[in-house]
Image 1 (spheres, rainbow, N blue to C red):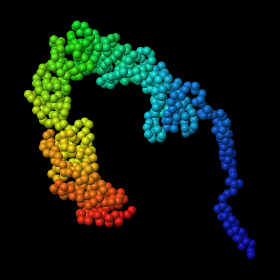
Image 2: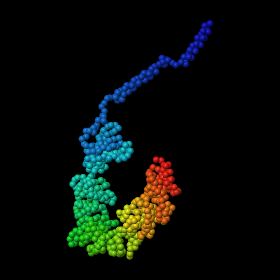
Image 3: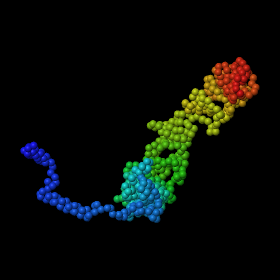
Image 4: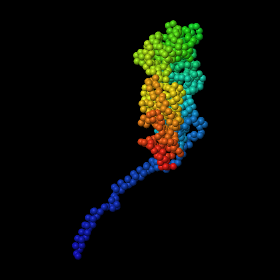
Length: 620
């Protein structure tokens, strides 16, 4: 090969190498020049400065320092319930907490879940300083077990009330208990009476010797007043004030601007023993019935007073003389008519004439019954021999009676009805009495009956004292004593109903037969008795079958009462052995005798054979 060809090959190889070098990445050495070196040095310096600043900041702040061991507070040792010397008075459960109340108002709270104790205390102020009396939770049923209860209440011995809601105690009512004039708390046993105002805001309580107490429910405050000895009536609220009655007179307790105005004594003009207090109708004042001093001396005279809102006293009636027989024990009823008092009592009927202040006798007989209309007018009075009607204080009608009445009932209009002590109903409309429903005697109080039966609407009962007939529909009675009847067997008797209302009586011991036929009308009902002889056998059962009376003897005999009045034996001679029937029934021409251990059968034609056959077939 010539050198020229080699040169050309070398040039081609170099051209390929240069092309390959142009496509390859430069090496680091090929990349480094003065400019790049400056950039690299500057970047390194900036990184070093930043690292130094970051390290300095972390060193100062301590964010990346390891945790420092330090003492922490343990809430489990903050309180020990045993350290409190105050006695425990109550314990309640609220959710999962147990609250233990102590007398000094401290509350030990025990968390049953975390097993931790904590101490709480009731709010303590001058108005809430009483000792703790009890705790209460406002939950019921499942709420108490599931922890839904939210409020706990605490009551102090002075009447204060505090509530715990969401763990915070707040005072609801301060210490406002009813403290008597002797400085001690008033218990329920000390109270003798109480009254409340019309709007329910004020309550007046009478604690006897401990005084009066006025409770204002708007703020829960108590006010204590003087004691009124021997209160007989009241307290009573009327026309904006409280009223009380005592042997000294009428006492008034008014309330102005929330403060009670206690009275020092009885109202002037209302002195004397108070027998009754009543609120007048509408806007009228208080009515007071008093017993005071008579003009001739003594303290038996009555006065009826009307007392106004401000305490002014107006006498409506005021006696000047007293009737010695009209006392508390004998007085039964009092009404007022036309300004006069009408009294009913053991000393009769009297009228007190207000104008003359005197008593007038209307009738000396003691009333047996009375009825007073609206406001006491009219007044119907039943005396032993007559009924009188009083209206406007005067006698208006009179009806004569034959027997005393037990009750008077008015009807429509002027109708008047009465009931006497034997059940007689009378129309007492003047001028004469008229019987509406007769009185039946019924039976004696000691009457006893051994047997009975029903005949349609009639009920007939028989016993040793006699026979009672009662019409259940008309409510009528007739009684026939045994002494007024033939020797009918009324004791140990079998009673059977027959045809046409006839009653058959069969003596069990001797088989004697009687029939009773009822007749007449009430109250003159009649009994006709007829004897039919004796079957001569002890009888255990009797029946009336298709117009015939049939008897069953204790030894198995069967007898029939014939139409000619004679008895015919249906079962022949008495059987021997242990044939002792306890009852009997019939199936066509045969009788069935249940016995203690077997049955016996008999027919009307061949009684003995049938019975023997039954005995052979019977077990045992």
